[in-house]
Length: 115
Image 1: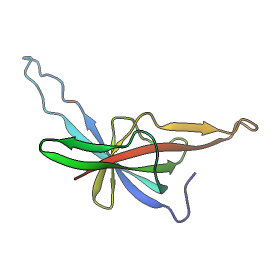
Image 2 (image 1 turned 60 degrees about the horizontal axis):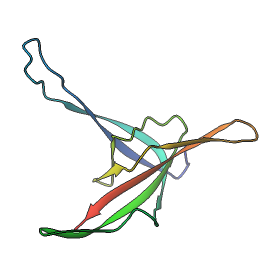
Image 3 (image 1 turned 120 degrees about the vertical axis):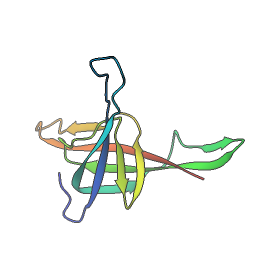
């Protein structure tokens, strides 16, 4: 599913570095790729709340991203939308029609703390 008036987002994926032949750590890297034509909607309801600690007071905001069933997105990825990074909140949900078996889409919960 690619939406005709959807937006393009950049997926950031951390790749662990491991260790070299001497057992010394090798730094990890971050790869990026584009998911084209996704839809975004505000997310409300459970799981959100205030971020409150001695040094910080804020609120967690969320979006739901709708993409193709085979979208390359993982729970450990971050998604860049209009220059802001969002965390994937849980496992992406992929669904198919119970009547035809047709693969319809992927729903991804995104979150970001503000403040």
